[in-house]
Image (cartoon, rainbow, N blue to C red):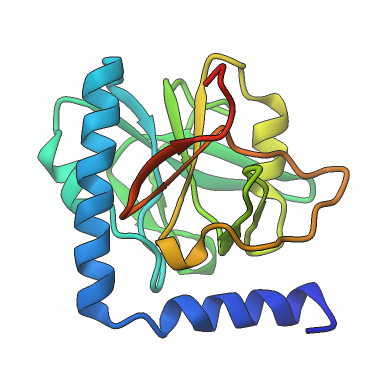
Length: 185
């Protein structure tokens, strides 16, 4: 593949090709691992995302913990890329994404941030949809927030192009479990 756009299209097609029952079972396993992480570390404020297309579906995990505060991103600006964060209720926003109706935090007040992507490498670098929202956020996030790349195992451990503005996550979470990439995490 010659361009990042072609690489993204390939990665998205690869994820889309996973059979729906496989994605559902894997999403359930990811939710179980997430539950364990949050309970073990006493996390109750989680930065999450509503599934878009064939992404990991966190809705059952979210529904299982109504007492936890789940924060979701809303596109606040595309130039520069900037997200705002809020809780439910959600509404359809830009690009058809489900976003909080009210998003008042530019830095999510969370203990753990779940970061979507099309692919993740061994060092926690990711390739997303190419708009730079999460890299801009990761650059400003307090160090005490655990950042976790979230995806199916088929999206993990792939070579991704890394540029100077890219920021790695501290851990990866798939249906196979949670893997910390740095000892301090």
